[in-house]
Image (cartoon, rainbow, N blue to C red; front, side, top):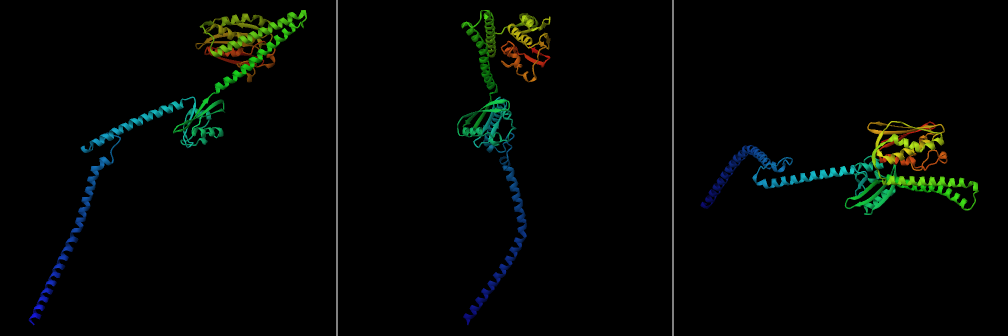
Length: 430
């Protein structure tokens, strides 16, 4: 019994202790929850404020490093960063110097390319136009293509495109092409690691000179053959006793005339060849143009009389700084032409004057005149405006060509004004 009471008392004490502990825990939990609920909002606000302050402080500290002012002198916010910032500043200066050097080189290359007389086109490995100068655009008569445009936008010539392909493969090619008013030589050269280069050379003058040389050779051969054939024929007749005694003087006179014509032709050919080569010795001195013209008129007086042409030369004196022998040759050819291509009863008038520091001499005739279509060609070698009349007029066909050379030698100019059936005026300005 006592034992049961003891156990019951112990159970009651344990129950009381457990109940007390439960009550204490409940009280503590209630107090803690209320305390936490009271403190959580201020603590959260405090954390947010501290976080914002920390972020602002960190940004202020790292701002000089994250966004340096590279266009101005770098500041040194921290002594520890001084070596790094000095190295960056040194690299900046080097890069700026290199960029300036590249700009100068680029400007120099652009200036050289745009002032070249030769056309230049640079093509990359993809067939795109990397660069092109103004001369190439002018020769090809095309607007400047966009950067990176295909070569197909510049030319569509199959042979040119084939040469471009070969040059991109490392082969060198050349082509001759005719463009409006120009003859051009195209050179296609490979450019290692860059693509290919097309160099366009204007060889119009060279081609024209070669053409004139061929024409000159053919004309000289023809002009030489005519008097030689006559001389040979008359000489053969004399040698074969085919000429009557009374006709010997006539035949020998023909031989003499053809020989004179041949000598005059050879002399003119030699003179114009020396003028072409610049081999004529020039002695510039004050020359009275009208006095020289009077000397020429005297030497051509018989010819003028036989043609029924009156030659008059102004009496005043007009000096020019020139070569006396060349001036005589120039005036001789002009006055001789004015007599030959005149009509019976016609006249030749020679005048000269000073104007604007230049000496101007003019030779006016009342002859047959020059057709409009022939005025630009009468200075060509062996060209004759009146083909039918030229057969009956003595001459080599080189007179005006020699005049043009002499005028150019003296840095002067010559102009012709003419009307068919009225006459021609040749004006030389020195």
